[in-house]
Length: 208
Image (cartoon, rainbow, N blue to C red; front, top):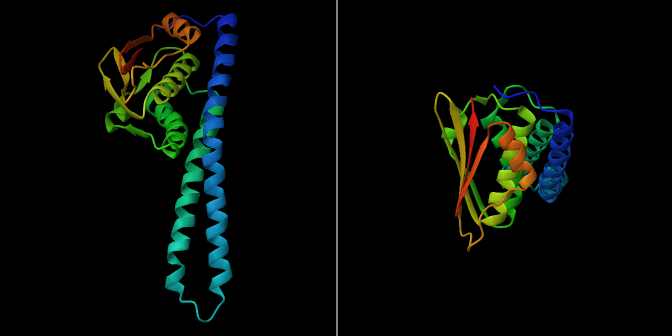
C-alpha cells in the first residue's frame, strides 16, 4: 500500500489534473456542441412537419432516430465529464476511469478521423492500491499522449493478483512515441505505478 501523498505533492497532482481535464474538455467541447445542434435541428424537423396532413409519420422516423442518437452521445460525454470533475472514489476503479477518459478523448479523436478502440478485457482490471488522484492523472495523461502520437489507438488491459496493466498500442506514429510529462511520471513512480514506453506502445502497471 502506498504512503499518503504529501500536501506539496497533492497540490501538484491537483494542478496537473486540472490541466489534463481542461485538455480533455477543450477537445470534446466541439463534439458536444455539434451533437446538441444536431438534436435541435432534427427535433425542429419533426416538430415542423408532424402537424402537416400530407406528411407520413414514418417519414419522420429517421429524424427522430438521429436526434435520439445524438442525445445519447451528449449524455455519454456529459456523464464522463461530470465523473472526472468529481473526487475519485477510493480505491480507483481503473476500467471506469479509462472509459470515462476515452468517452472524451475518443469522441474528439474520431472527429479528426482517428481510430480509438478499447477492448473488453479492460473491464476486468479492478482497482489499484495507488493513490486514486495520481492513478487517474496517469490514465488521463497516457490517453492524451497516445492519441496525440497516433492515428489509431487500441487500449487494452491485463491483470494479475498483484498488478493491473493498461496498455496503448499506437499505429501510424510516424516515428513519434507517446510521451508523458516528467512531473506526471515522477508522481506515478512515487505511488509504485510503472510507466513504460517502447516505440509505439505505452503501458502502465498499477499495484493492487
